[in-house]
Length: 163
Ligand code: FES
Ligand code: FES
Image (cartoon, rainbow, N blue to C red; front, side):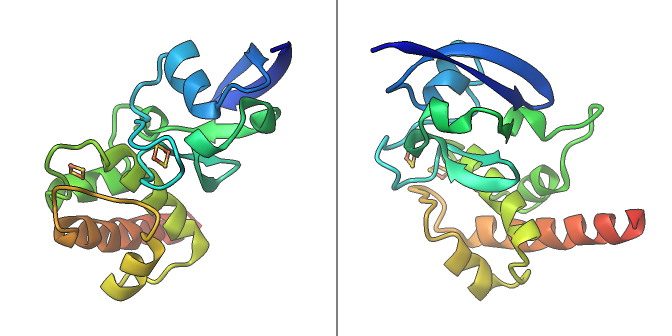
């Protein structure tokens, strides 16, 4: 299929890329840009392992055409750590041991970062509901939910300290 030129910014880096019309955003991130922290679990928009932020919103990158990302700001798990310091959500996942095999973790963390800006309350029931599109086969979710509640509270404290 015919190639098209797209421009997007990934983790703060401007990219100009030639993509096929059928190419997925997750393929561009992993195969073209080497950002393999974004995982593929199902390829059918069900598991959430491929979740990234596009213009600040959580999207499943296996369900977005690269062409649809033209002009977008994309953030992946590799872009969360700033100046050698973990993002508060990454720290919270570590503190609460919110993972076992880690396959779902990048998608969980990116979805959780988006939750904080969506105004999801930092309490377990609301987090479980907001997490319905992200599946974990290992943990039973207890540590993940605790991490997200803690991480959102930390993000909001940090934001109010900066304001
Ligand atoms: S790989 Fe995208 S939702 Fe499963
Ligand atoms: S930690 Fe293994 S799938 Fe979630």
